[in-house]
Length: 118
Length: 117
Image (cartoon, rainbow over all chains, first blue to last red; front, side, top):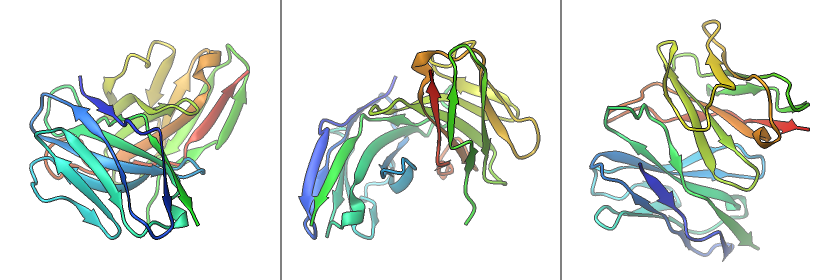
C-alpha cells in the first residue's frame, strides 16, 4: 500500500518570502500522480498543483512549483512571493496511474499548516 | 465554472440514527468518491463509485456505510447507525476519468460537517 508522509506539522513564512513544504511517499509503482491540495479555514479542498511521475520536468503554476525527485520519492512544494491568502493547511496526495484495484483514490499525507506573517 | 455541491453543510444527529449525505457531482463526470476528515487529521478515502457500482472501498467503509446514485445527478452516502467516531467532515469528489495517463482531476465539494451526539 502507498503511504504519504508530511514531516512538517507547521510552517511559517513572512509575506513576500519563499517557503518549501516537504512530502515523501512510498510506493512500488512506477506510474502515478502526485498532488498538492490547499485547505483554507473554509475546509474546501483546492487543487494547487499536479505532477505526473513519467514527466521529468517539475510542474509549475504561477507562484507554486514542485521539486519532484522520483528516485528519492520526494515531492516538495515551493511557494514564492507568499501572500496572506496562502495561509492554509496543505496536503500532499498520491494517486496510482495504473489499473488494478485502485480506481483513482487519493492517499493523503497528514498535512502542513502554513502561517503567513504580514 | 462547474462545481461539486454537497448538502447539508452541517448535520447534527443522535448516536444510532441514520444519516444521508448528498452530493451533486459535476454533470459529465463518471467517477465519484467519498472522503472523510476527522477534525485535525488527514483526509481519508472511503469509497469510489463507477458505472453504478462500488469500485473500491477502504477498511473504514464497513457495513454501516452505503452509497447510491439514485438518479442521474445525485450521489449519496448513507450511514445506517451513526457512532460518535463518525463525527467528521465528509467530502464528495468527482472526476471525468479514473485510470491511466491524462486521468481526470478530482474536484471536491465543500464538505458536510457531521456531528454525532
